[in-house]
Amino acid sequence: MNRNSILSFIIVAAGTGALLATTATSQFGAPKAYVSLQPTAPGTSQSGNINISGSVLAGQFQGGGAGVTGVNADLLDGINSTGFSLAVHPHSAADITSGTLADSRLSSNVALLGGAQTFTGAKTFASAPSFTASGAPFSVTSMGLVTNLNADLLDGLNSSAFLQSIPVPLTLTGTSTAHIIRGENASTTTGSTGVHGEATGTSGLTYGIRGQNASTTGYGVFGKTTASTGINYAGRFENASSSGRGVYGYASSATGTTYG
Image (tube, rainbow, N blue to C red; front, side, top):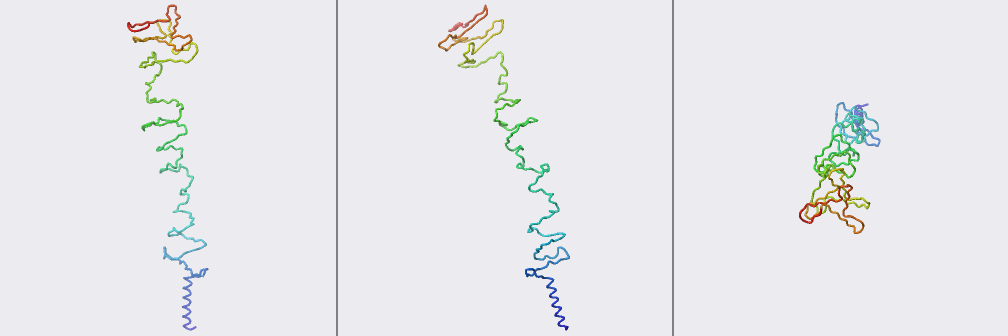
C-alpha cells in the first residue's frame, strides 16, 4: 500500500469515527443527537429533548419542574403525604390547638355572641345572667307560666302598689258621680244579694250594714226597686232580738230635708 493510500484511509476512518460519535439515525430516518456524560456538575447545558419508554435512575434531578406533568412523587420537600392535611379530611376538632376557627365552620347548635339566637331547648343557668343593654332584655311569645319567677316590677309597678291581702278595716276613698262600691247579682234565686253585711258579734252595739250621710239633702241608706210588678221591697230589715229594732233611723242635721 503506497503512502497516498494510507493517508486517504486514515482520513476516511477519522471522519467516520467522528460521525458515529456525534450522530445516529433514528427509526424515522432523521438524525438524533446523543446526551454526553460529563465528569463534573453541573456540566455544560445541552439543548434537545429526551423521550424514553424505560426508567431513568439518578441520585438527583435539578431544574424547573413547571412543565412536568403526571409526576407522582414519594416525598414533597422530604415530607410524606401523611404530614399534610387534605382539602377534605376527617380530622377531629380536638386536633386544632391554635388559630381562629371561622363562624361558618361551627355547628348551628353553637350560640354566637354577635347574632340573634333562637333556642329550641330548655336552658338551665348555674349563675344569674346579667343584661346591660337598654330596652327589654328578651321577649317571649308563650303565655305559659314561669314557675318561681321573681320580678322586681310588674308592668313597671312595685309590689307596694298592690294589695298583698284584704286590709281590715278596708277603706276606699275617692270622688265618683256613680258609686265607690257596687255589688250586682243577676241571680233569680230567693235570698240572693247584691251586697251582704253581717255582724256576728253576740254582744255590743253592732251593725250588719250602716249608712251615714253628711249632706243636708242626702240619705244614709237608700233602697230602690225598679220592677213595676211583683211583691218587692226597696229595703227590708229583720231583727231576731227581743229588744232590738228592725229599722233604726237617726237624722242629726238641724236643717234640710233629712230622714231618720
